[in-house]
Image 1 (tube, one colour):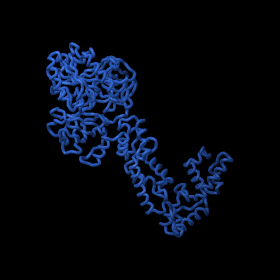
Image 2 (cartoon, one colour):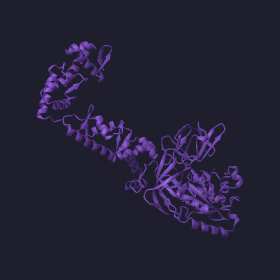
Image 3 (cartoon, rainbow, N blue to C red):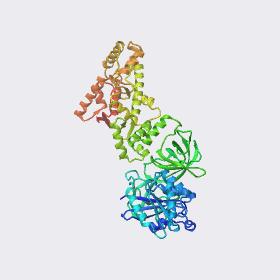
Image 4 (cartoon, rainbow, N blue to C red):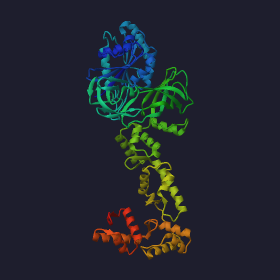
Length: 631
């Protein structure tokens, strides 16, 4: 079922609360001060049933200019607005300000209601209508039906209810597939139940026993109970006014303006990128670094505004800005905000969030402007691609991108799959993703590094893997880098052998002298296969330059020569023969001892120990007491 929230708006004492009582049969003024002064100070909430069977929530917002913050907290949750104008006073200052705010917040559906119609004659009512028609020109209420009522006598109420019912059919349902999010507009305690918060669910759904978090503090809480219109429910959905009973948290730990959200679906922020549309009748220009009041959801916060593409903002202009918040907030792309002067508290304009977790920008940066334009107008896949591009050097996980964008993980995965097919992003394992541009950048940089290394070290099998890693990523120790290297191996860009990394098509090419040295070394290591001399002694007697011998030795180590430890090196043929003899003996006898292995190879204890410990380390054999078995 579609969930609709209706709200009133208009000047103080124009009969908003009385109108709601006529529609619902219930009072929304709940404070003694409200009843005493005859005005609404806090938000009032109730509901009523429409002829079609739908149940609509209704919010009564204060009209007094001193309580504009409370009015803004209510407006953010509205689907349909009733702009209330009293027949005996007509359009007043707060009528105009409320209309500006409603327009800036992109409220799309509304009805104009003239109250107190019986206090004036019909001719006067017609004059008020004409004035209203003039004032709402070029707003979302232009051409909207105007209904005259007397809330006390009930005149016109039935017609108004029918019109509301009609509008609910034209109103789009909110997204229940998105991660749950609800700005908190009231907090109170009920004896025996504990802390209760209320608000309008902006997106998603939430159920009893769910664990959610309070942002921006990221406090995890459990939902004990949920009520919608005074009745307990198991699950509440986007568009519903709800009261949520939270477990194990005190009222004093929560503040109005904070947000209940699905765990890890949003990240607190100290900066917000946005477009800012300034009012047409703005009396003074907005300057860079001006201190402003920022309203979103049910929150009011202070911020400094950085003008990114203009020296100053003037009336009617649309500009790119970055808000630098004084306290953390929690928003997502597409959220609407109202911006007001710090003093006097007058509305400047309306902002729409482009990025709720941006990096700090320099002013007049063309790349930043291009990026913001893409994010503002781009489709979901373009925005996801841009987000991956920005964070690629962090090797972001999919869930982290989903959190930054307030998307469900499954939704993000589908977008990423499409981007992979378009060759725009690359997966590193099942969880990490980078942009293809970053992959190409790393690939080309590694090719450059290895090209230089091979030119300087033609007889070495490659650069040490850790050295290559530190040159590419001096401050990053992430294990994801190994996955990136594996991908480069799969794509035949590099090859990795043990601890060495080389270009895929690199091969050691020996000169005549180097080939002679290699042959001499092989002959020496095969002459007495299990009692080989130390390399230091070979260098002194082989008859070639020490530097060249060391180069050739390094080139064939790990392929032709196998280093068992710092003392013992064997030729690969001797090494493989020893393994074969060991396997043959164990297959026949079940196990082998050190002395038995020594005798088979006709070697000393030193070489037998070196071989067996090496084979243990590579998990070819396994030691059990004084015997070895195959691993």
